[in-house]
Image 1 (cartoon, rainbow, N blue to C red):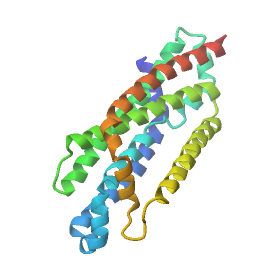
Image 2 (image 1 turned 135 degrees about the horizontal axis):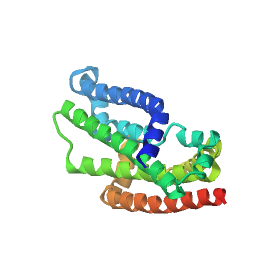
Image 3 (image 1 turned 135 degrees about the vertical axis):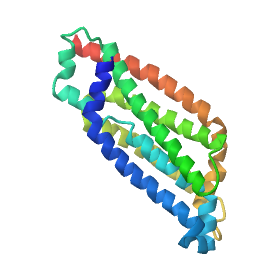
Amino acid sequence: MKGLIYKDFVLSKKYYIMAFIYSFMFALIAALVRLSMICGNLAHDEEVLNSLGRNIYVLRYIPCLVFLFAFSVDGGALYSDFNCKWVRFCNTTSLKEKNITAAKMLSITISETAAFIISLIYVTIFGGIGGSIPDLGILRNLTAMYLIVLGVSFVNIALCYAFMKKQTVELIFTAVGSIVGIVFSFLMILKLNTIDTSEDFDLLDFFRSEYGWIKVYLLPIALAFVTIMAVVCYYVSVKVLQRREN
């Protein structure tokens, strides 16, 4: 098991380095914007400052999401296993489908946990710039984000084993995301048509007022989601590998 996990990280090393660099640059920009709100140019623009102050959660959480999603994949190591016939080779050894699947899920969990720790460091620095420290609410939200992205990562593993083609998996995620986005946008348009947006309207304030209640239930939902996805995707992945062997 350790060897399988080590193999995944060796194959994904370059990807994780580049993912960290790009994610770090995004987080740095957000931190600099926060610094500018306190002692930079933005501190002298009251209108912009008030808007950013009300929606400070965007600067706090979006870089964390970037880190989490960047580390939610293995940079193509799983596809490399199929392309170089490594998975087929494993069928001639004592390695079982359960070991292969468990190792892949554990390696993704480790990389996601690393991204979660990096995100914790970021929100601590971000809060320190403003003279505060992360409270339980921020930690709860960040943990929920980590669990949800981890659950999506497990779905990605199962789809990769099922279809073996990166383009197909990406198409599925794109199609699902597009459908959800279209439905959400349509519902938002209907909702916006029923309210007065003639003066002093902030779209982010609107989203927070409409969906702020979900924060109370986000962590339990995320915990249930990642648990279900872990069980289902593990079972599906093992069955797919066993069927290919037979």
